[in-house]
Length: 355
Image (cartoon, rainbow, N blue to C red; front, side, top):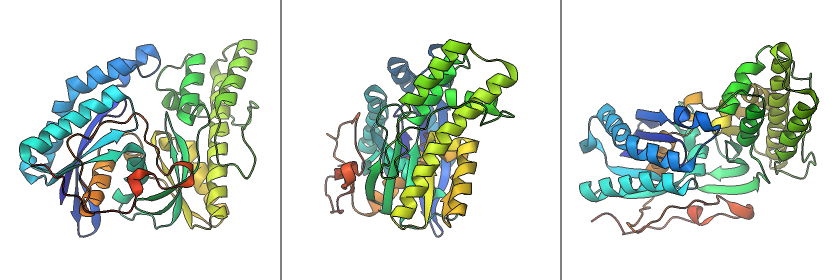
């Protein structure tokens, strides 16, 4: 089976083709158009601009992905991000997917974006085993899940306020580094001393798997207001200390959750998972506790359509289909409150295929 995936939940317009091969799932084509240049002057994602960019780019992105796969005639089904995300952006991808499915009489399925990040690991040459703990870290999400198998997720903890990516972006703006903040902070942190600046670690209690980065952001803002924006080596030290504070909290809680739930390892996912220091510290702490750590290729950390196609392919194989009245969802919890969300109920065959 070959599935065309479409992703437009935020500020990347993406399309990819994934197929079932003898060795598992493999990427046939993967195209991503980033909107960084469009949003950089504003220091963050502007929803209206994001929607317009998707409208302007999505046909070209889909056509390039299909060309790389040998044409739409090779496609058996379509998967598209249904949510969570910016509602205007989601609608662009959703409507394109519906149109293609209707015109080509293809089955299609709406995919949860967070499950996409969790399932990016399935595209690796050697996917991680189940069960495991997964840490999804991005601009809008910092969540820990107990993953018993594909489609079975228990939410252990999440962001109470600012996510890790938001903390990077907001402090980077205060430092005058520009957007995207995580990339700029990491580049500036090279050669810096991660212990030079004392910054808080919120929610240190061992029983809590929740995250809070608003206090870190506030502490950084107060310090910068008092001392001014550092320059040169002092700026590198500040960025290294900020990066270390975020990576420290994320990795400690992930390892704690893995040990508590007696699983073999931790899967790192999401855009912030591309951060080199976070990846290094996760591997270091997992190995120290006798756990394995799976860090995906950086290309599969940021928003992409290959992960959406992977989820869609597996759900389609289990008989799932979406109806044409399926709507976009700006909020769509995955394994919310320790229970399986509607997305991951036991599969049942559906008959509402394209006709």
